[in-house]
Length: 150
Image 1 (cartoon, one colour):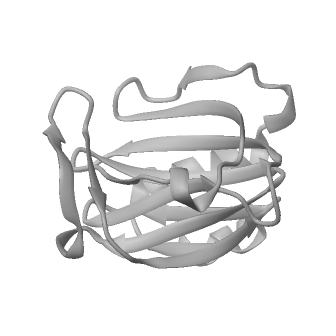
Image 2 (tube, rainbow, N blue to C red):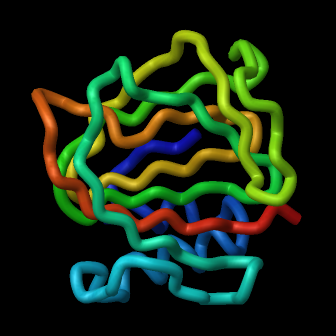
């Protein structure tokens, strides 16, 4: 897992070509102007999901993990708590769905404050719980880039 300000994205450019492409796209795109929904960058190999939602109480949070895609999540506006835990320490509550590329689980993890300008990278094996409240419900605009593994 990586958590950092987007302005420091250049230091992660060598991690993988598509992660570099995702971070560069975030830096050069007017993210506030994008409509909610999917934006294709390299078909199913790299695409963005533009999301708007209200943060939830911690009791409503669900751990999720993926196998086919790396998540690059960027907070365009708002604040949230972002959870992280290695997937192998979770108790699986919804087995892996290959078509939808996710599983759900319960367990305890760490939470990071995610404010406007923060980017997070979650690899397969990195369970995450996005969209949790900081001080109460808050509107968040986020871009989730799905980066195909391999």
